[in-house]
Length: 362
Image (cartoon, rainbow, N blue to C red; front, side, top):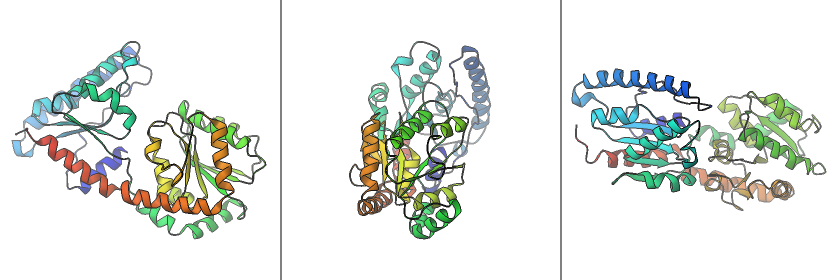
């Protein structure tokens, strides 16, 4: 998403400078780690101030743009630079978790809250973040919801060649061309991702009497554990392809009949959007911002969060109805074309930057 935001900014005609490569993420909330991060941030602030303030006013940045601000990864640089230069401070995807005000991430929580309070504009990609962020906004600051988006050109192309791509995948993996192909694309790491894979395996366990083939794309530190979740299934119907390039993923998605993801605590899920752009219906749990991507009953099916039987029933219903799958897949692709493209996002972001600059003068 960070790369997509940069692409959207450039598409709208803005010059984008990556001001710092500092990684502020503090995985465990360790106090010493936070102090080291803050020390490096302070050095970056001094360096950037010296650099930008030495330039002619017309050559300095017009705005600061930060992506994904929260208690584990607060922006320790942007607010200070925006104050020093007198420029607007904008954030895409900010979240605020009051329950983190005490404990190991207290300092990160405090820094994230301070940054949100300083922001001129918040771009929300997940509407569930808004209730906690909105009360922190300063006077005249605004929050705008931006639908998750992507550069869908390769996915649309793959969708138009789905029959060809399916034939290639069937031959390559020695699949049964008469049996529906299910696909999942996700990283294999601990926490919510692994919990989602576990729910997927549990749901498919209830469908052993229903013909299906599963293709899983993804890799990560929990790959062996994920593979173990599916050990009870015949290896003929479960294939692990590992990490794949984006063009390969587009072809694989367009080859499938259904995209599945239980979406445990998912913010919104880019793979869900990619699958729909490739013309595939999606079955996912209605978690976080997932509901804004899937039109239930039209582009896919949203199931009750954490309800494995509901998820299994949804899979079974679409496996038995190929015409409905095709109609949903076409509707999914059309929805992405209308609401979730890089071009549409660039227009909204450009408007936000123009609005946030009002009231500032170099």
